[in-house]
Image 1 (cartoon, rainbow, N blue to C red):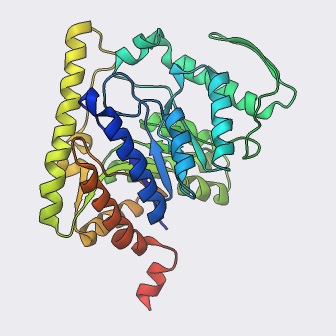
Image 2: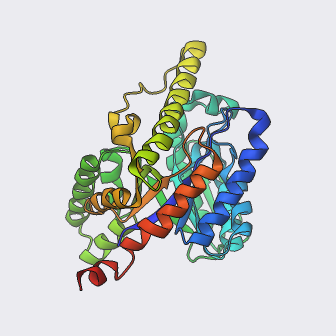
Image 3: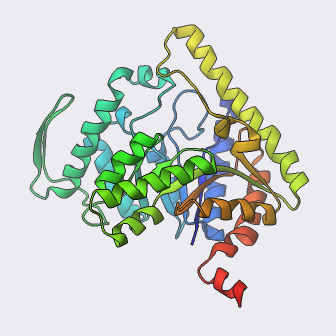
Length: 355
């Protein structure tokens, strides 16, 4: 059974409209809760308007109090920008506010936007090692009732027992991002599920097969492997409308404007700073609407989702509001998806259709 979620990743190009877009986000969260979306994923990006609410930790508290049943996940918290003890405290508090509805998605931080590190006074070259050390500290903080000490490359800590204790035991649910095949296989050897970026179905199928084989080779049993596959997610851009033509009319310009805006922003920063953290070689599966955008009628989108289901991944992170797309258009797309696409993948739907 394929599972569905929404990536709430709102663009705000005009600083004077930030408050309006943030209010739209709360409304979208409430709509998703009402319609039965399983998870609302939050992003983290700073200073550029690519993510209007900026701070997903603070915003998650607002979403959790505004909703009743939807889970709130991080896709991802940029761990290298946070002090790990503080982040562990904040996640434990959110876990209590939501009574276990938090998914702590962890990643090192952006590989492209150097100003995010500069704004926090953090060397971007150390983002990877900061992340690795911070993850271990957070897990210790959640699971050490007597407190602990830590001496590492970046932090020397003497941490008493963390308060509040998390609602979920032994700690909030944690998932890691893996944007590369190497990253996915690293998590497979640890027997952990993962979050994937936008990619082709061919890439997803290949990655899932390698991931499954690596877990089996590492000695994990069939039940554990199946659980990790079910708990892994892949990101797709999605627009649903009554007809294929209308969905393309709505979706393609919004998607292209979003990609062009991000490309120009990165080129501007490269030109100003002369710093390229990572050469951007983005495949068409992420930038070409013919590959990177699922748009169409409910029937067409359901067919595309069935193709994703066939790759073996357990869930799809659907990004519905793309670039400058108006909030009401995104809301209509979400409603159509949840009312006419998602039910086709519910437990019992396949067997019922076969009878």
